[in-house]
Length: 118
Image (cartoon, rainbow, N blue to C red; front, top):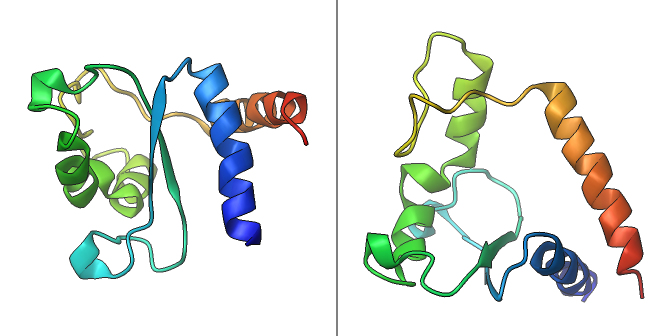
């Protein structure tokens, strides 16, 4: 119950701050389901109308989560290694975020979540 209460709370904030009109909420349980990090975690993915039309439609999100784009553990490992290439369609333009950038985003989202507190 605590997990899904938290998912609901985070979802409200994510939807608001990223101006989403919908969300995908997913748990990948087991490697065959696309789980790449061996602990329970929930993906809360902000969505907008027609956001994946260029990839074949809304259900493209499932292939993205099961494929390299959803491999968060792999992305983290590559970000720690400067000689590894980026990922995704804009890999050449993408630069790994710094610890400070991630810390600032986490602080900003924490402040935003306070606005949505029950």
